[in-house]
Amino acid sequence: MLTTKAASICLLLAFSISIACADSEVTRQHTFNGDDIGSIRFDINVGTLQVEPSDTGDIEVSMTISAEQRGWFGRTPDINNMDLRSSQQGDRLRLSFNEKNVKTQWLVKVPDLDQVDIKLGVGTVEVHMPTFAVYVDLGVGTINVQANSSEIDTVDLSVGVGDTQIFGGDKTESHRAMVSSETSALGNGAYVIKARAGVGDVTAELL
Image (cartoon, rainbow, N blue to C red; front, side, top):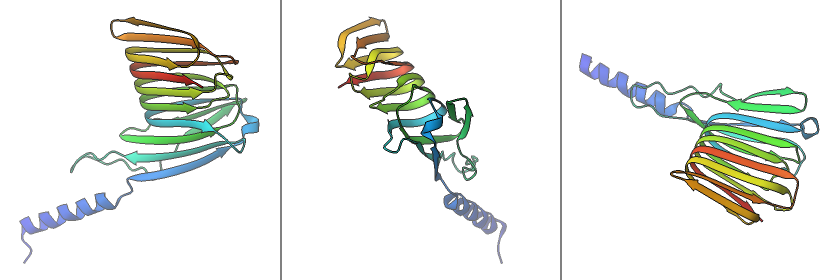
């Protein structure tokens, strides 16, 4: 005969198995026609965003969503129906993801554009070899931009609590005040890099 205690244990085991079997990670793929887009804005709550050059001329987005486990009795988010939101006004594309209790890892391949704006709450931003202006606003985390000096006009980095560094470039200037830091430099091109963080480290490298 199944006792009340045994039944409770079986119910708990079944509940645990159902949690373990639930999807804890999904990946979404999107492609946007680069001919129709001049600038992109990212709005992301938590995660890692990596931006690289595109070989196809289109904007290619790969986004992996991971659910955060919340203990035995916490409710694990259902990520199966989650995806980024996209909208376009004129030639400006906006991509956003602000679901709670999940984190995202983005790999975005971008062709030649006018501008990319990034707003991230917590996480990491990495931009490699941009042929467009870059503006980054990060709450907490790290920013790293690696660019060709022949493409970049000015670089301006700032952080409220943390450190800023620029490797390469001309006329580099750094200023520190208590826990804040600002660093600027010049390149030989036309585009601007402007990145700031509330707390963290912000670096740029001009090759």
